[in-house]
Length: 83
Image (cartoon, rainbow, N blue to C red; front, top):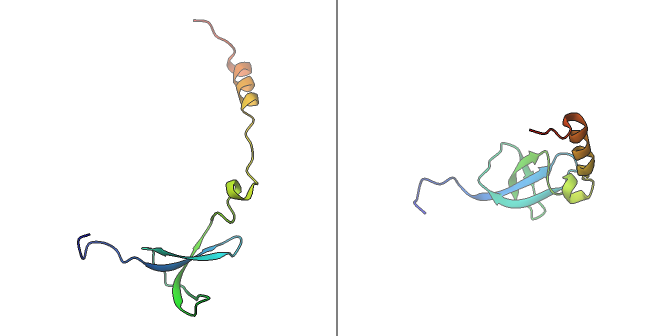
């Protein structure tokens, strides 16, 4: 990598806004908010809306779309038009 053109890559704590679960990872993101982590060090804190801890796909709360119903609704609305 060329020196001086890349952003600083450092440890950051991300926290899920809805569940409160936090995890430490590395990122180029920065924040004025800080948190003291379990290891005693202070890291920037970034609060995010959705993580795998609260996302419907990963928690099993995902809604299943009724594709057969959508096709029937389309056929009722537009029918089988012959050209």
